[in-house]
Image (cartoon, rainbow, N blue to C red; front, side):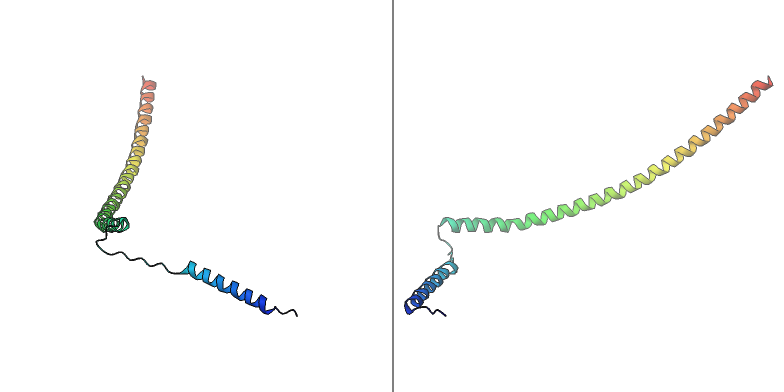
Length: 120
């Protein structure tokens, strides 16, 4: 088995230290501190965003209320449409029955006319 020399080992050790240091620099946590009253653009932007987020609460509440009202309207429309469809079916049945009766009356009138014409 071929063992590394002391120089190769020290060189490897140095490379590992450099790699670890490089990785530590990449993974070091970033801390951010914003103090009130600082006139920096980021702080102003953050404050504006927080104000906008705060004003979204009432808007979201209004939207929820509007959606609930719309859902109620849709349910009312569904109920009305079901009633309308039931009335439409009933009207169609009545129309069909009326047409049958009218056809029967017309057939009877035709027979009576034929009988009257034969009897002349």
